[in-house]
Length: 485
Image: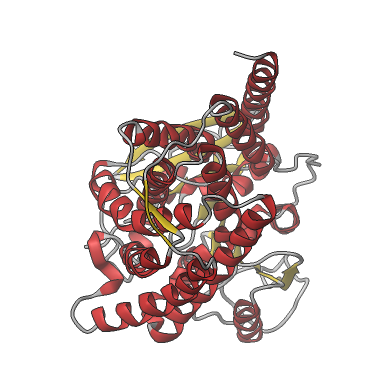
């Protein structure tokens, strides 16, 4: 191994170790327990110095396709500021094996509430609620139904609830500046709750905070959102503890991914492409034509299939099965237009599995403690391979189209694929509004495609990169979207 490769591996290892130190330090000084109650997975956080029956308790609820891990930014900040926090997975989400089928998710919240009240550090007379998106509706309804139990409610990217000037008590609404529909909804809720009011002492406090540089997903990672929630709770409970903590876990998550990509770069530095090609088009515009056509074929195909089956629960997973079907149709449509076709090599499968392992470690292992329930429960594991197989044609076509591209060409392919995916899924949402939660993927496409393009460039062999990327992306879909009945 060359001297430069040893330096690259040393730097990669340093970044990986440093990132784990940064992430684990977020829980320093906290009590953290993971357990289950009545089948509901829970995470409990509290300050280590808390005395029995002495600190306020906060229930923190995630949104659709979220998980308890996604809300850890709020949990870590509040626990460091002197609150006991309970996070949980709603049915069908994260590690909760029950399919999402109930319109009323209050029973899961009640399980989390009972578990919170069982913790010795919690003062049962001082309780609050915080929820994002789908979870905001659940917590607002709970606060309306039990106004004497909860002293404050924070609804982030709020959905709906029958708010009044009397309930919930001390309602704070938050919405990202880039999510106009949720801002409008928050304004309607604020008007229904009696309008802005600073009167927290009587439980009539009301306010709407617009979070800058945030949309529906990034708002839960915003330090401005975190601190606005803490300020509201401190005012409600007369807490004066100053908290300098700022959630930087996603920064360390990026450093961790970079470290593993450096490992992959060092390991593939001496690889040389050796393929057997067949059928080559002389005009390089054909792959671009195929890329432009593919989302139209996929969108129309899903529209036709929607007449034959329920796409919303296809494959036993909410929306995620339809995402896999889209990639299958788009990939099959794009493949005939790719620059040329390569037969797989004998080592394509093992190399592809190695790529999957690197991506799994780079962006999955740390996801478990930053934003996503990465360890798949059995009911999710069984849908992983079908999703990966469905996505494989797209990533194979992508690898073949980019095969001999120079850096500027790969940059163009990254930008084009990102735009096509966003536009293609936007078309599906327009044609099939019931699949509207596909929009959760739209902010993820540019960074994901950037990573996938880099992997494809490092390997210089489309079959191996397509196998590894498809397995990883299939795992991501299986981990992220809710289970369906």
